Image 1 (cartoon, rainbow, N blue to C red):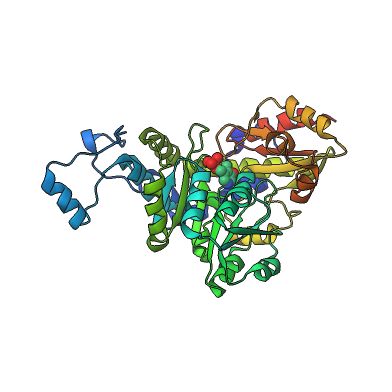
Image 2: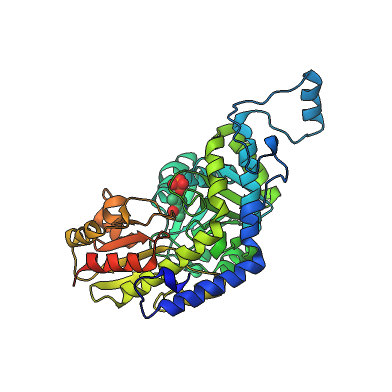
Length: 417
Ligand SMILES: *Cc1c(COP(=O)(O)O)cnc(C)c1O
């Protein structure tokens, strides 16, 4: 970020710029942007076009009967039927695998479809899952309401409490699951401890790293088996598509891929074109998301009307040390509490914001803002909200890629004095 782009110079501006530069240096050695632009793509494409075509096909033709026999007997790599994948999806799977440092990626029609895809292929009746308790509310709902119907037991333990997680392990435990950072508290998990706990007991581990993206965190480098993302968020990045991805080793993903071929839930080719296009600017967008997240978090922390800010890039954050050692940056999501405010006074702050739009979701170029109480937990019991740390005076903001000073100025007027 250059200073000319910033209208309102906060005293912390320099730190943000330094950090963004540090991130850029690290990612340069990781060749992230080159992979984001080129990985998975053929050098010469149909029609000699520089972009990949969108093949709107539900099925793929065989030249003759012998071609079918060759395809099966020789295990040829080609398309067969739309539910097993499409050419555009293969391009994006290879691109995401390169970015994540994974052997393979497997795309789904949404992040939830991806997470469910792993659960349903790894777990059998009688198995148990251990989940850190700060998580996306639909992941929790799937475990407790639906996996339970198939005889799978879920244990939720306090986020980051590895002793509690170890205590909950028994001979039926098949999967350890967490997000990092978590939604909406931005807690950061020590991934080395997490992966090692799984290895010690030969239990697979999965991280939903949606909030981090491979720009900020690459869980496979720490030994995690499955990495899931809602590609609807930063990977797509433009609030214009839904998709999800699971990444890991070829061996671990083989049964997951097989089940996806049975259940469906794959992507339309046009959506894959949008995802591939969105990924071209992945590194540039993430640099700005990180810079905006850090600047907004620092501004909010200094504001007298703000009681508390949850952002792993702040020294005041409980997990700042582990976040600093394992992450390249801390993302665009900032959660904060309004001092001495009930739900209505908190809603008033949200309603006065002019740039960020009021909507669920995160990770797009447009900033979004919401009150978790109203957006995701309106129907939850008050004692559950208390237990999950969803407070009436909580606001979650997803910083987009707008001008940093404009976002801060807008929040400043919305908070009033
Ligand atoms: C949004 C989100 C999901 C679900 O992804 P969809 O693409 O909406 O299905 C899962 N986990 C996290 C952390 C998310 O933010």
